[in-house]
Image (cartoon, rainbow, N blue to C red; front, side):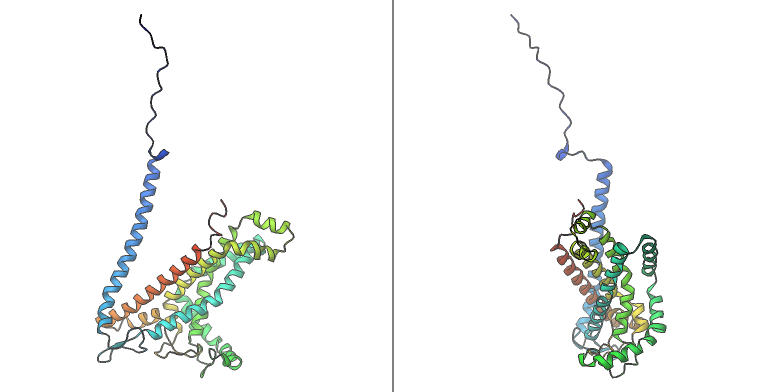
Length: 329
């Protein structure tokens, strides 16, 4: 007797899905483009580093003095002498002055726009700050040379009269305002829009529930900002400051227009002495021979390394503070 199997047939097997997810063509294209963009950026950075290293190696090998510690930059000497001690000092000092001035003001402006000012006032101020960020650096340089320098003579004399005991603000000629202090003020004005815009966006990302909870517990507006806004935005403020520092380190035309560069290294920031990497490159590149240009490229390599170290340090600081990451998730 035949036995008939009446059990239902098994359903057709579903198509295999890779890793449990269906990959759309658009997602694959976007993923590949993003990966390619990242790789291209690394290639460009590596190409810049290789170019600077190759061109700088010849100048550093033939330099009669110590490239890192010699003060003098004299291409006409026999043999020529190139040293970047004064340039490194001037670049770092002017950038630090710019940060010390710009960061507190930028944070204050960003807080005013995001938490204090009414909308009809905050929007025009935001537009003006955006316009300041778009002004070319040569315009800032001309303004600094024709307006800022003459009007800083009184401030220099006041600082010399009352704060010369700090040594930093001591000057033998405070009327000569073309100094690292003037450059620092000009750079602070230039980086102010960058730091303000980034900080404002970070402040606007603070979860409203955090602020409302603080207000509900009886905190004042300043206490809410101090306890809820600033801790959340700390890493964003650091990022904004590093962006501004990168602009200050590499600024060229504005510094070249204002600063009276020399090979004198002094701690007195009101004295007309010192120089920066970018200012020295733009001033000497046109008249330099092949060996001199290689030496200028070598100074550019040092500036490149300093910028990488600064940004790397900023990334380490940000990585240690996770308040911003995923806060709105």
